[in-house]
Image (spheres, rainbow, N blue to C red):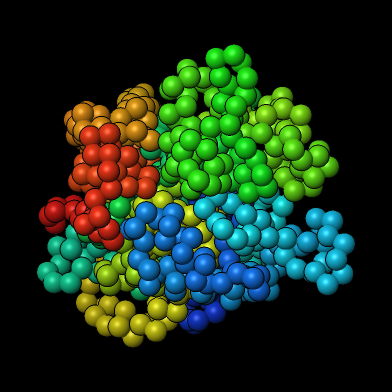
Length: 554
C-alpha cells in the first residue's frame, strides 16, 4: 500500500513545538520504528518558543495535586473534565524530571538571590492568575525558548528521527475520503514541500497532529504567523470530532506599541504583584479590577480580558496599563530580562513607566476532541498540544497549564501508540494510497485574492467573534464566511498549491468552526460571552460543543 518508500515512516508527527517534539522523542523511547517530524517552517518556529511564563506543576511540599485540580476547575467554568485534569496534573512532576534530564534548565531560588542555604537549589516558583499557590516553573521569562532548545537538540541527536523543515501538511489521508467502506482510518498525510514546490505523500502507521494554535484567524494575536489552525482544519476534513472551539482565550496583556509587534506581557508579572490600571477623565491612573473579581489583577484571564475590553470602551482609552513600579529595576531585569528589554525597545522602562497593554487572541481551548492519551477515536490519528481538546482547559485555560498538557499528553500518546502497534498494523497492506495530483490546476496570477480574503476573515472575526459577541454579530460572521468559503474552495481546486493558499484554506475552516460553535452555545461561560445570553446555564455544565464534518465528501 505504500505510495513511496522514501516517505514511509512508522510514525508521522506534524508540528515541531513542545508537544510535537516531545511526542517524537517519546516514540523513539517506546517504539522501534522510524519517526518523521514535518514542520512548515524551521524546526523552532513555533508558538511554544514564545511562551514566557512557564509550566504549571506541583513541585512544592506545600502544594498538592488536589489544589492544582481545584484551581484548574475554577478557571474552566464548570466545563473541565475532572478525570482528565487530575490525570494530567498528577503526571506533571515525572515529565518535569524528564525535561531536566534532557538538559532543560529551570530558574532556581539561588539564581534569584535567595540566600537561604537550605533552599538555594529549589525551583524559583512563580504565581499567575487563577493560581492560589506558587507552582510555575520558569526559565527566566523565556521558558518556551529554553524547553524548545533542549527538545530540538535531543531530536537532532536521535538517528531515528528525521526532520522535514519547510514542509506544510495539506490534508490527512483518510480511508473514508479515499472511498473505502467501513471504519475510518488515517494512513498519513499529503505534505507540500515549499522549497521544491511539490506535494509528497507521507504514509505512516500513526499520525500525530501537533500543529499548535490558530491565533492568525484574528486580526490581533500574540501568536506567530504560522498559527493557522492546520491540525484542527485537517482533522475536521478527516471527520474527527471538534470540541469547544467557541472558547478562544484572549490574553489580557499584549504590549501596546507601534514599535514592537505582537509581544506578550506575561501573566507572571501580575503574579509578582503587577496591578492593572486605566486612565480616568482627570488623566490619573486608577485601579479597576476590584470592580470585576475578588482576585483583582490576579483574576483568571477571561475575566481580565473582558474587564480591560469594557474599560477601554467605557473610557475611550486606547490601552490599559500594567504597573510594576513597586519593584526595583534590578529585580525586574533579573526576573523578566526579555520583557524588560522588549519594553525598552518600545520606549517603556517598566521600573519607571506603567506598561501599556491591550488584549489579543492567544490560545484555543477547543480543538480535536481526544482522550488523555491524545487519541481521537479514529484509528491511527492522535492530536496533542493546542491542536487537541483533552478536557483540561474547559471554558478557560488556567495560566501555564498549556505547556504542562503538551509534555504530559505527548508522553501518554506515545505510550498508547506503542501499546496498540499490532492493532495499527492490522489491515495495513489492504489499502492503496494514491500520489497527490493537481489535475488541471493552473498557476494563479491573482495572489491579491488570497491576501484580501485572509485580511477580511481576520477583521470580521475580530469585530464579530471576539471578546464580546451577540447573535447578530455571529450571524454576520456566518454569512461572510459562507461566501468566502465558496471563493476559497474554488480557488483551491483551480490553481496550484502555495503555502499561503494552504494557510488561507485552514484559517477559513477554523473561522467557520469557531462561528458555528459560538452559535450553538446559547449561554455565556468562561471565554465565550454572548450579550444575548449573558448567564451561565447550569444544565450545560460539562457539556461540550461538538462539530463533525456531516458527510463523506472530500
